[in-house]
Amino acid sequence: MTRETLARLILGGLLAGALGLSLAAYGLARRDVIEIHGRMAEAGGWTPAALDATVGQPLRLRLVADDVVHGFAVGQMDWPAINLLPGRPVETMLTFDRPGRYTFYCTRWCGLGHWRMRGVIEVAGPGAAAAPAGPPLYVQLGLDLDAPRPASAAPLPEGRPSASRGAALAVEVPELGEPRGESPAAVWQALRAQAANESFDDAELWEAVAWLWRSQTTPAALAEGERLYAANCAACHGEAGAGDGVFAPELAHPAEHTQMGAGHQTQAPTAFTDPAGMLGVSPAVLHGKLIRGGMGTGMPAWGPVFTDAQAWALIDYLWTFQFDYAASP
Amino acid sequence: MTPAALSRSRALGWAAWLAAAILILALPWPAFARTPADRVIRVEGRRFEYAPGTVAVNMGDRVTLELVATDVVHGLHLDGYNLTLTAEPGQTARLTFVADRPGTFRFRCSTTCGPLHPFMIGQLTVGTNDFFWRAAGLIGLAALAAVWGLRR
Ligand SMILES: [Cu+2]
Ligand SMILES: [Cu+2]
Image (tube, rainbow over all chains, first blue to last red; front, side, top):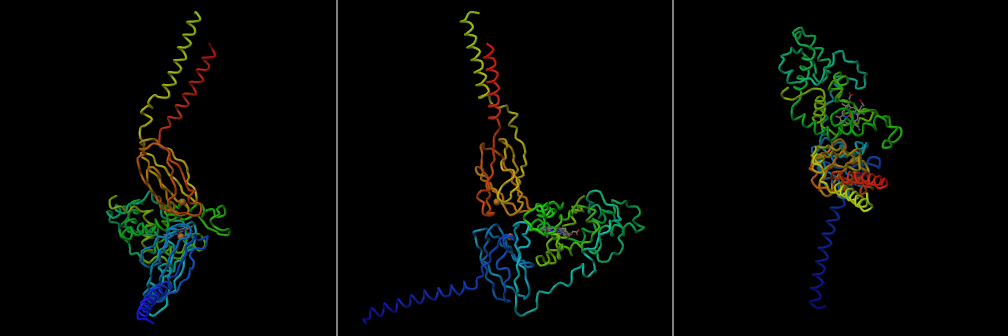
């Protein structure tokens, strides 16, 4: 063998080795990329819908929308949602630092069954699971979410009572227990029962209730609630809270519509603008319904999706359909 | 009347009808019909159609298009004006423009919404309806002229 042939062989071998190594490295990196396909809930939702991960180890995902626009987010995490357009797969990497059971969900409306488009990620590993913030308020207060609601004994206000006007009244407020455990009507009656409030008429006491309600929230929470409401709730409950969202007819008459399979017993979404319904119920009960869901009524369970702060921001925002929180009346 | 005078008056009569016809065709359209108006047009998008599928406005109108998606995310791209809207169920999308180009324009869904997505198409017509009225005028005129011609 001449020297030249030897040199050629060595060079060729080196080149082939380099190429092979980089290919192998690429293959290794791709091996743990999990491809997740998103389809409308009626066509199967997410596949796969159950993932496993380990604390501290990146979970690589390649997300593909197969039919219509979907979105991907992990519940209770503040990672930004990822928009998924058909034909434009997106790769992402998630790293969890606490073990636990996480829910991933679709963030863009993709039909009446959109909210069913969820999956779970079981994260194993050392460390304490993300601590639950204790039982929800309705459980702490022992409230029954499904108890029939007696008609409000307080006379209903006309129009939306103004919190700013209520703030100017100097109404005598009695000691209330957990403020979010009482309905506006109950607080109104407590105000009426104060001898010092005799000079105020019924409408003024409602303005005082609106003021008490506003003082339990912040402009930042209301803005967050407004954003979450538009994205997650308005399609059923209506953009103005009147229970007239685009899916309301299907929920009210499930049998006449084909999107829902037969056998679904759903009902019309609650109108948050209806004072008779809203003023007799406490924030704690509404919060409970939000996180637990309506149990077969068509109201989704949002507990695994929203953080505690987000859920309360939504409930705070719902009261703006009853009370006028504007800074000046 | 002499036959010559008769035929002359007949010819004059036909000339008058012809002049009226030309007037109907060429008369500038009265200005009042063009007073621009503010129009809000709500279009519902569902797989795979728009309701209404055809929309007509007048030249110069300030048009606010409201796109309401009733099942999945839909878009609306208006050819000619080059405008795009995207709406998600529960979040009405709005866009205001001045209809300053006459003609008939297609609008089509700009967000993939399923197998028949390419066929999700609607139509916007910008213009006064004067073509219709001029045609109606001509037909009326022709009827009158026919009656006139037969009577002689
Ligand atoms: Cu989806
Ligand atoms: Cu579409």
